[in-house]
Image 1 (cartoon, helix red, strand yellow):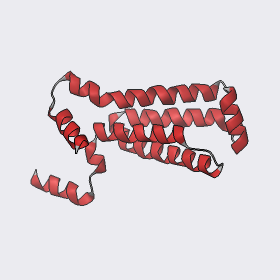
Image 2 (cartoon, helix red, strand yellow):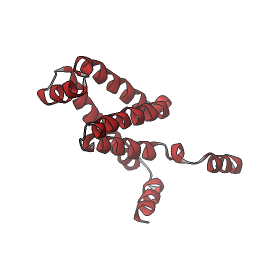
Image 3 (cartoon, helix red, strand yellow):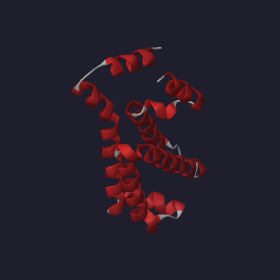
Image 4 (spheres, one colour):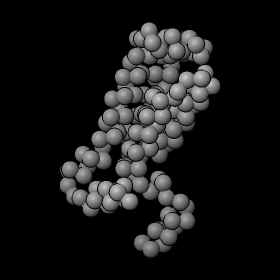
Length: 140
């Protein structure tokens, strides 16, 4: 119930404050993902250990580039939906790999949660069912 009230309050706001609040999760996501990509490029020891364990050590830079491409697609409004689906698949795969290795997939789960929150705040219609979208479009 509180989430619905917060959502209603956010979307009844006007001006720049609303825009800033909507973009905060996207900016946090940008910070996390860019940091992760840079750590992959410089071969941070913790990541080298993890990626060697799963057999992807030689592809760390490629994964970093992939993250940045998907993030760019997500941040650009015209390709946000495509970026959202790519990021969801990417971090869902990261969670699957970590679960397979017996690890707790906390980092990809947190990032994936931020992705979904950011997508919802920027484009709530992304989460409507097809029936609801048709009803809304018919009422316009």
